[in-house]
Image 1 (cartoon, rainbow, N blue to C red):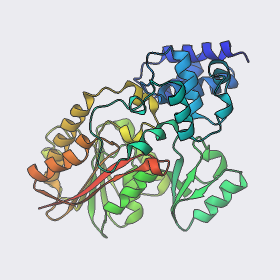
Image 2 (cartoon, helix red, strand yellow; image 1 turned 90 degrees about the vertical axis):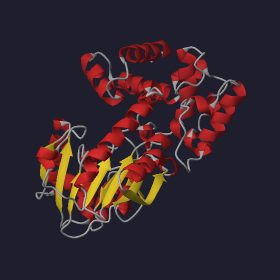
Image 3 (cartoon, rainbow, N blue to C red; image 1 turned 180 degrees about the vertical axis):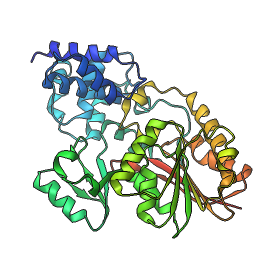
Length: 387
């Protein structure tokens, strides 16, 4: 295949994308509409466009093809026609570590700055090491699954039988290469849940008790609720979201997991919901708040590329408003678990400070889960107690 052919396919895909849909969904639709593209065309176009977005806004004065070659060099350990054509003097070093390759790019392109890969002026949450955080954007995170402790060996056996590299993170967590087609290698979908490592680690903050009544108020497709249920199966659960399609996905996952004892409601948390919830009192509330998603941008680099700084404050207003509308349904001395998949202090520590000062909550503990050190997403979690 000639490089011109690959470049043309990349340019057409890039031109067709506006950042509105997640890139993987856009690519699915684009490839479906352009059936003349063979599997090799699709594979290379996807690789190139993801590499391109991982460079963020670094070296923005260069033309797109040179930027693509630099990005593809940094993101991969196997060469490509784009690298060999537009970056021939560095091709032999493509198997080096990310940090070694960054040093080479800095030597050949003095204008290259890692800060331009993540070009946001907003302050990062406490504990983030920029020397580790920025280079991680050139590495696709692993795929993590949560497995019952009693089933983990059976799952590991199936993965190894199918030659899938697997790393045991804990007695319930496995890390796999991203892109692993689990449905083809694990014969029973009830044996596992796809859930990022940091998301799993938030469970240490829940501490549910037998026969508690909990509310997962921004439940989406139910990952945190499933984790909560795995920690304490004997509890009552209300799950809600403003998006009906997300709750449909949740119901499918709950059914597959055998969870039957739960209540489900479509609720807009920015409205007064006293008519719906006036008689509810909860022993715990999970608030996985809408946020910038900046802790997941290694997985979705297109979001990094298209994000604008002003949106952070919009999310902060949303987070504060939602928290104010739900905390009144929490029993005294019971926990609100506030979570984001953001690395911005404004959405994390600053919101917690606001909650403590304005909503009669006491901070028990909080943490930025630095997923970039474990090839995972990053998340923030705080446990606050109603006074």
